[in-house]
Length: 74
View 1 (spheres, rainbow, N blue to C red):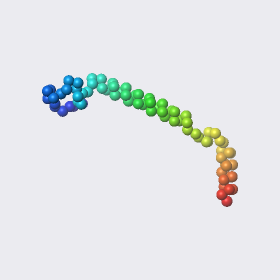
View 2: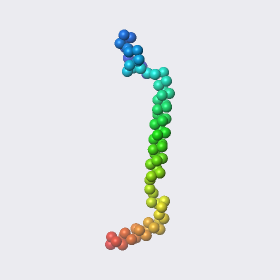
View 3: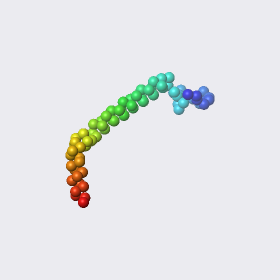
View 4: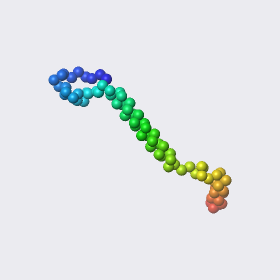
């Protein structure tokens, strides 16, 4: 990362806005991997709560319901 030239008498001792820690790539990798783990966990939690009626009811039930609805609509 290239920083603009700033005179030494202007720079704060802590680094200020332009401070880049020596291990910033490791810190970024840890942060992104933690974010990925959290997102994966939330995805799995969401999948647990989904409801798929095709897994519960057979196609025979569905066809019978469709026929009953078709008779009511006529």
